[in-house]
Amino acid sequence: MDPGQFFAASRLVIVAGKGGVGKTTVSAALARAAAIAGLTTLLVEVEGKSGLAAIFGREPLAYREVVLAKGGSPPGSAEVRGRTLTPDDALLEYLRDHGLARLSKRLVSSGVLDVVATAVPGIRDILVLGKVKQIERAAAAGAGDAPDLVVLDAPAAGHAITFLQSARGLVDAVRVGPIRTQASEVLEMLTDPGRCSVVLVTMPEETPVNELIDTAYRLEDRVGVSLGPVVVNGLYPTVEGMDSDPREAAARASAELRSGEAEALAAAAGFRRMRTALQREQVARLAERLPLPQIRLPFLFEADLGRAQLDRLAGELVAGIEGLTDLSSASGAPR
Image 1: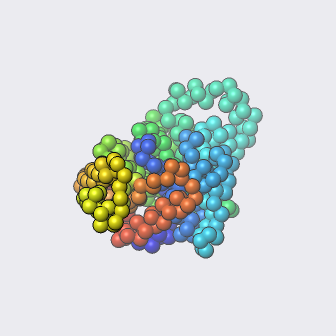
Image 2: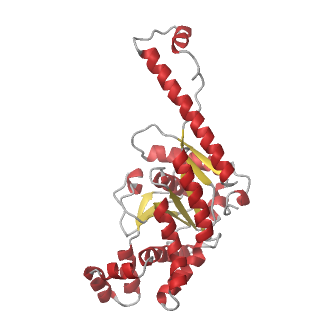
Image 3: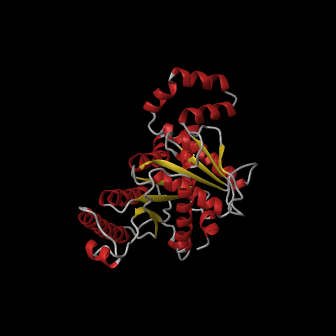
């Protein structure tokens, strides 16, 4: 599949997964891959301190939009922008836009929002999603400096379900008024495949795979979102010769091993074989339990991720997208 076609299929891509599976890194790589495909992309974090900006070598994100990566490198690529969204800031902007600037400051400083959030579960999430909806609508209309694509780094899997389910909960609980209107419009966005899709991220390990499968079915049943391909992150590449005896291999290479090196090499090879077998088993189990296409990303052995590593992962994502047969194989909820 053409990457441009893939990224143009939905104006909002929500990236979700269990904490520790590399969800934030995948969000950044997706944004960079979309930009390489020529789409100006806005990368949004909703919990703060996710490290998104650091991957691009930038300062922590704020509510105001900033450029994380300029366009033009490689030729034809577009910008990646970034911002963070918080309920307080979203409420302040909403009230300012409706001529209630003084009231907005009092509400936040007095802690009224915390009281309302306790009384009306899901109100904080709907404030954030309402702002996301506003950005998505601007993208649809091609308004001003609106991005072509929004990539949202969602909360970790457990909170992601309640985060995305907040709109449906409020539609069911609130019968009239601006809260219901906002929730209804957010729900319309989340359930429209042309506007929104969810990319789930996992690692090839039993617990993350189990949680991803559960999250996928719960998102389909409770929210009705369109699921894109699953990103399996952190795969160890296959290395030839893991079954070789270290001493024999050293002899063939006319090399000498110091004391203890043969044992250490044998132990490392044993771990690599075990890890490879484990990930092969979990990837196969995921494919059997969740009939969605997979895009696989390699494990990076660098301690810190920067632009070079990000661009490598973006390239791997592009290659994985190109390997998808058509749009129907890249989206759609599990059955």
